[in-house]
Length: 327
Ligand code: NAX
Image 1: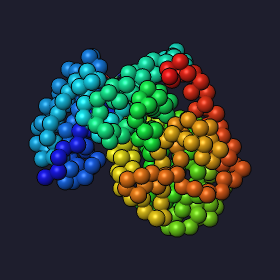
Image 2: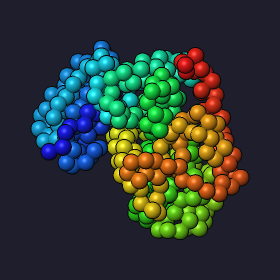
Image 3: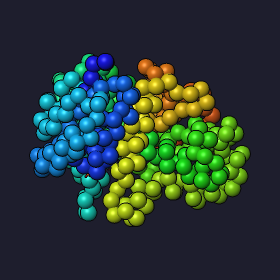
Image 4: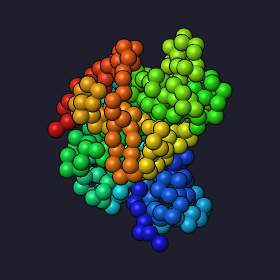
């Protein structure tokens, strides 16, 4: 029997948490033979609901679940964690400016970054889901500079999964026929699903879907506005699909990527493809199971270049809005 891996999840009593925790405990995150301890972090008002979630986790009798630590203490929450999934954050309310939201959440991610650095296991890796996730990740990372920068991630996988499904539906193929679809940039309405490098059954997407107007008038806006469409239909933001994307992200980071594929996650940019160094920017990525690398040598056409720059500009602006939180 392997030693348990401690996984910390913030916002554990929230919507995404409710879909995510049960899949972690049943082995979907780290594998069917890997025991886990769940360290569930909430703020004080969420602790009562978290009690109920803990009861339900116990009632599943998951063989892999070796312990549950519900807490609102960050030091206890991140203690021994090898993975930190930062899901909790304050949602944008009516009348709130983006700058206000960045400031409120920024303070949360400052203290979480520090607590991760002080308490987590030496192999800690962190995935930020709570929005604005790229900039929240930037803040946490910069408040934990003893942890290597390549261990920080922000989630754009839900956007990738949405984009792949849209392409599969349009082409009338199974979704696993679609490969190499990467999201570039910010997890926001400026993110860019680069369909030029994607393939359907090994053929380039624009050679399979020849309706050019569909990409700009339908595909890109649908992917960019999908979150809003779900809120409109469901009255609540996407949760199960977001939890699924978090699982997919960790699996893709920790298992080798197929030679004909890549995946999307936002990472610390070292200036690749001319993007401002230091931003948390989503790129096409590959993993060898241990280390990640950005897919190199892609030809970026003028259309893609404009989109890639626009989402970079937004991230750069977000960074300047939180400069007081970056030591
Ligand atoms: P909920 O409001 O259902 O749950 C959030 C939970 O976080 C609450 O239980 C709250 O008490 C807790 N919380 C708030 N501040 C906290 C803190 N400082 N420490 C610990 N817990 C804290 O939101 P939910 O639907 O679960 O969404 C969570 C976050 O994911 C939101 O920021 C949301 O915008 C973001 N999303 C990100 C996505 C992505 O692709 N990156 C997609 C889905 C989702 O929109």
